[in-house]
Image (cartoon, rainbow, N blue to C red):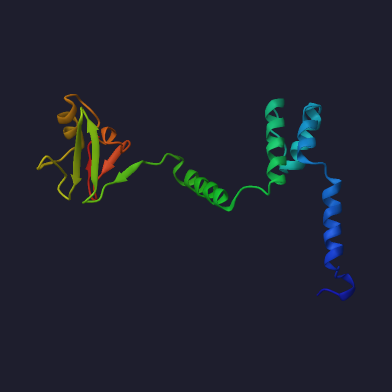
Length: 175
């Protein structure tokens, strides 16, 4: 329960907040002061700002960088909510799989058209449920089409600008 005599008017609360802000030096001054601190002082600053002890064998440059980053983060209100969510997601993935790599798979839906200019001609490929239609014929692989167009071995998905692996709706297509 809040007693009426302990409730501060809004002006008093704002004044108290501005006094607290005025007592702290701006982050640029604190960051500049890091270069003149001793190694022991940097460890103390690390503990103050990061709230746990610094690793024992961490070099001076990394101590300064970490403390400066923390000071900037505090001055700029920290990480965005989206960044925090992404970091939490990555931490959960790392805890369960111990691998953060993500497969780059592009799903081509039937009806999509791939267009590529090569050798002065424009080649248009239609994606279907059965494969790829080019020049009225159905092909099972983009790589075979790329080989027919260029006369040399090509990764079909790369030739058509699709990235590492491409898949149709239910099956993988060779790269």
